[in-house]
Image 1 (cartoon, helix red, strand yellow):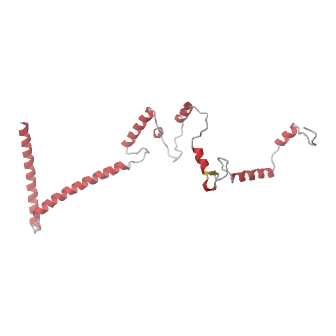
Image 2: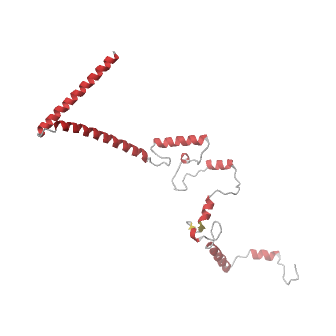
Image 3: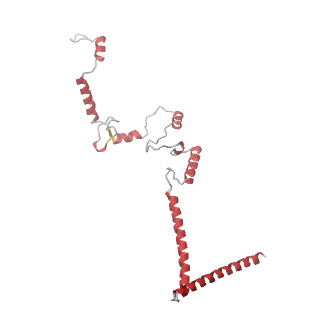
Length: 216
């Protein structure tokens, strides 16, 4: 160095310039430069914007959609983490609010993905049995399928009763269809009903007698 017409700055001069507060012009220039960079580059990947897939967050910061997906995907780079510390962190998390819907949840609501340990599988089986007994699905919502089955069974029972009633009514109508007088028809229907009742009793007595004979 030297012989170039310049001078070598001393330490006190460098320290003095470094400690100097920036001027208003310098602050505005820095802010303008940062703003221009933010308008042209993704805040996550620092790459130029892809205008067709541009998104923003709640603060208004702009991102490339692809950068968001890459941030959510597992990284291929080695991470300084051990299975033991990761397992402890997962089990000792005290957060009780779902980050997706904001609803409160309990430890039993946590479902490990692709569970392989016997303890997890057994816990999940007990959990679903408990939810089914309460009429709930695995998402703790009301199970509408049970209600549909119940309604279907009730409807079938009503249809069977209606069919049997219509059959009996049709038989009675056939026996009194030739009677034009309403009073006579009702009287005849009453007589026929009593007769049917007696016939049923006779059949029951005959069946019980056959059973006693077979036993003896």
